[in-house]
Image 1 (cartoon, one colour):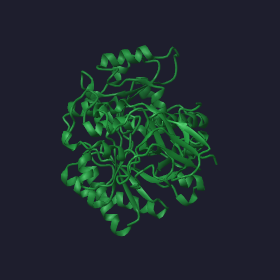
Image 2 (cartoon, one colour):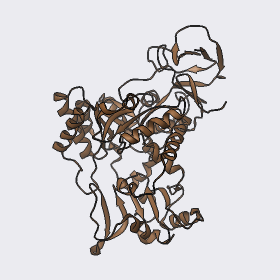
Image 3 (cartoon, one colour):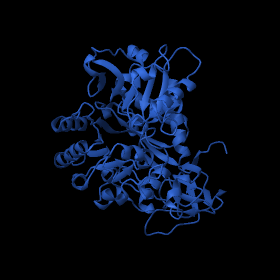
Image 4 (tube, helix red, strand yellow):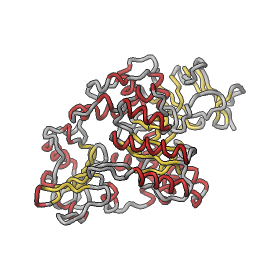
Length: 487
């Protein structure tokens, strides 16, 4: 295979004991120590860093959001503005669902979720589905409620909540932790369309310098895993892909290519109904059952302190009986000193989202959150807790550079300081977004895969509050350009 020399660059190898370089030699997708190049690529003095690793994103949701009406805080500041936004953007068609995404109740003037009566001001002849910025809440209008079959007599689905109006019990239009219920009742999309949607999301991530991706969808069954595999294959050398999977998938029944893609089992540990969706015994039994059918570990969605503590307890318990069974804690958004220590002792890996400091910092302040306990990056690093990065896109910003900026400055998009005691160094933040959940730090040393990103500026030397402005010039996976294509 052709050997390619990428030269005239500043290469940040990210190996503490080894200085940077000015060139990379790549053959057969691997960085070489020496050899003769068949072709030379002049990088014109650009910065080269290891490829970014997004250990937690949602590919189908990314594609859906990209074609929906943006109702985020930069577009909508009140219920009236939301109504106007949806009305103005509504297609001329008189049928089909109208999708809005990204609204934030705490950042609207009324500081509340929209209700069915609000959305009925937009239209009552076609259904509306409005998705919260977190993805954990939805609002529908009266037509939407009817199509979903939700009435005053409807019972809540498991772990979900139908918000009600006073003593009447009538649904207010707000649905909490009912994404699966809603998704099952949406118009069906063909497999080819879904495959194209996933491929478009992979391409978008590549445009932000991401070379390795884990889809964190809790509903990734065998059919969805096959769909993800087909979409990745269609890109001919796109970002490397893994996927968390739903409980109950027997790894031994997966074909070899799907087995290689399937990662830990995803478990949702939520408390929308006021109590956690799983108790400690139930969570442990689920993990043991997953181990029995070949899972290498479980990835526990745990946001609140109680959930994080329970996930850490699970890891500590299984460390004795199933020492090779891994535990990921997805988000661990709220954690204070003793909780951090408990997680560190448990051996679990935390998959954190520093990008939320930038995109949701203002809502955290508006909601009165204990901001010192949010995404405690310095606490995790000081305690030597295994740590990895995820964007949670589309619910968080796609850009790893925004995540680096937020981790270093602890500033929201408006400039508010969010837990200033938890800042970390640029070098640590860069290592965070280039590490896998397995603890592997990606470097650009000989023998390593040639997954790298070409940047317009050096994040190590530029002003921290401008790191997010750095441009992605090119993204390479195994020495092959995945973005931009066609040049």
